[in-house]
Image (cartoon, rainbow, N blue to C red; front, side, top):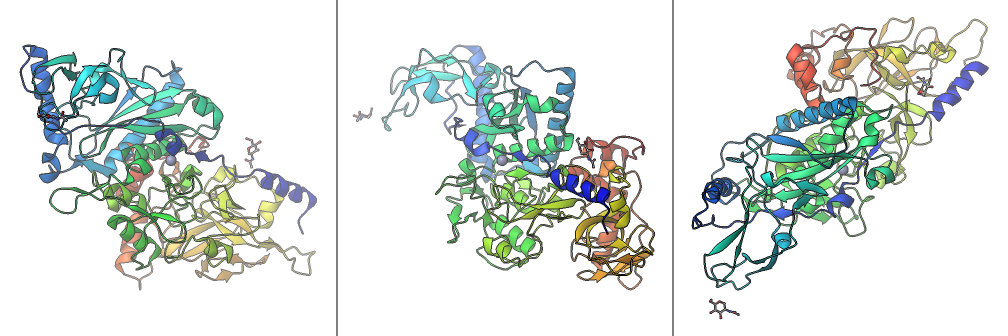
Length: 619
Ligand SMILES: *[C@@H]1O[C@H](CO)[C@@H](O)[C@H](O)[C@H]1NC(C)=O
Ligand SMILES: *[C@@H]1O[C@H](CO)[C@@H](O)[C@H](O)[C@H]1NC(C)=O
Ligand SMILES: [Zn+2]
């Protein structure tokens, strides 16, 4: 029944493989970075006659007040984190369009992160500590002396401070002193305090270069490390290296760059194996160290056991298992060590998985936000998490090797055919990757994969045969439909493939579909339907469509509003209302878009209506 020409097309589609995925080498990089923790000391005594220094000491005292014991004991109400970006002087001279791309991506990423995380803000200008091991030849080590742990002799070859190969400007650094005698307050100022950075809680150095690491790893767009923490361990400065070559590539995608920067920011702000065991418990008055939070669960999976993560995962998997810690990737960690990514079999699609797939499928999920909350350094707006969908309600063992091998979960696939990505926005090819340990999942095709893009329709005989419709309200369905022809007397046994059909919601987890030339037909979730004029059937996925109001095509792609919604008179549950609000109100769309990262465009102008002719392939 498939004509020779459509068969050829079919082969081409299979060869298009998946989107080039972003890989993260954070752990390798962070291991090479020196981290300096601010020390809790009394402010320097005002003994010098140098007035510059006196002013600086006053500034430092304010900083210590914030960084030190006082802040956590009497926390000021948390405010959105102020992330200041600073282009390192090591950065290449960028062309205008490279600059525009990177500025747009970083600005949007910073906006998203600061809309999610709040901190007790730094009072006064932020000054980074100098590394005593660099400027100092030796420290006073006798704990009964007045200058215990202070610098005794200057290192004469001391020049500057770095943050992962970025030279920190002196202006950003606190001063340092040398005490020539173990007991005398007499000191020599080695370097004065810099002016610091006002209105800054985190300083992000951007180093835009083509580094050796960029050249060695063609799938790396950016990598990062934190290099300074305050006295309670909260990171206050870090570097994101952005691989310059990626900025000019034809397949550069703004949303993918935004997500990569958010991912790296989450690492440097606390989602890092170097920091897991320095997280604080701030649930009581004041904060105390959580101690070691990562443990093996007995099956060889390292997990983070902290309260918000556990309850987020319990909620997500609908399990009451108290041992449900946040599972960490075991494929990018040496044996016996930990990774700074979620296990991708369990949290596929999370912004903190080791691989970021197609940007329309990456989610800032509840478990990730819970992890940032459990650092103790941030107050996180958990209500703004995006539905992960992957693994939703599948129980505590979801994502274990067994659940994918014995195919007990519909989230995993076998073979290599074309089906649907689990969000049903895209067709997907059943594939594995280096993190899935042989488990296979449907990953979006390299191009032409989005059902919601009208321009993906190629009007091929095969498309026509299967009744496909591409467009904003189309989604992917497993289908074996084949148009009946008068010349055919036997039903051809068509194989099941991912196909794009229109859908419209009639309630939570209830919807109708429309195939080319057909009426709207109720699609009973978990069942399948036949369509008049077609051989074969279409499966109606359960708990994937019309349930998560934030699973939509990118909001700035909207060129037609979703299909008319029919309200079922009998269902008046709160869920229906919430769902209706979620799908119809501009305010909600705006809110969702803010998390997705289209904040900039959407929230200032409500929904931006795109002219239909515009090319959206750059989203
Ligand atoms: C440490 O300092 C105290 C007070 O200055 C002194 O009495 C003691 O002998 C010192 N101890 C050592 C081991 O140098
Ligand atoms: C996919 O991309 C390739 C190369 O960019 C292009 O030649 C091909 O026509 C595209 N296919 C579809 C279905 O858009
Ligand atoms: Zn990473």
